[in-house]
Length: 237
Ligand SMILES: Nc1ncnc2c1ncn2[C@@H]1O[C@H](COP(=O)(O)OP(=O)(O)O)[C@@H](O)[C@H]1O
Ligand SMILES: [Mg+2]
Image (cartoon, rainbow, N blue to C red; front, top):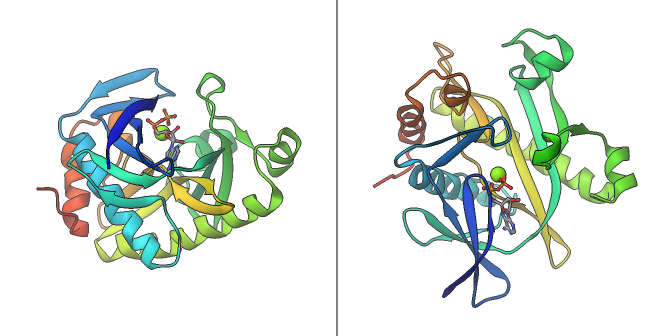
């Protein structure tokens, strides 16, 4: 697989074309951003951790019947993926209230959500990724009803698989964000799954083990990511 020109440089990853029109190379960088890019810092080893973490989680999801774009790890910081036409909606499942839902709805941080709830956000940095509903998506053509129904079902299915995976490793999956895309009419999970895009708390102490350590200036960001990887059995070396 030959790496060719850069297709897109996002906030945390760079995407490269390859000699196969159906395959891309994702490079995970050390850049870490919060507030839609308002705050940016580099953390040594983060690209490598998130690359290997994402591959590990995507393999679990594929095995559970949730198709993902992941094909192979190419290096510490690069993975080969299926090229998707991304749907510009972020799919969020929340098992426990934390972050923006607390500010928006005035609920207490740490409140258990039963049943878990679901939100769509428009992927749009200048607009600060606003929450949108299904009528907005239909009206503005971001996704069809069938696509949204499938994204919701897949995101809840991933919640079942991953909540158990993290619980077995002594962690609570508080919430997470997924991005999907299409290839030849089929829906695949794309992008990444790492502590950058989910909230994870220690099951006993509720210690924060995800990107909130960066957002809230708690320190020990990479140490927490490594701890999560270690507990799950993700090989980092
Ligand atoms: N398989 C894929 N095919 C095409 N684009 C993808 C795929 N997986 C992820 N992407 C897109 O590539 C970009 C990844 O880089 P990232 O740094 O996360 O960017 P952003 O700042 O837009 O979130 C995202 O815009 C994401 O939607
Ligand atoms: Mg992103």
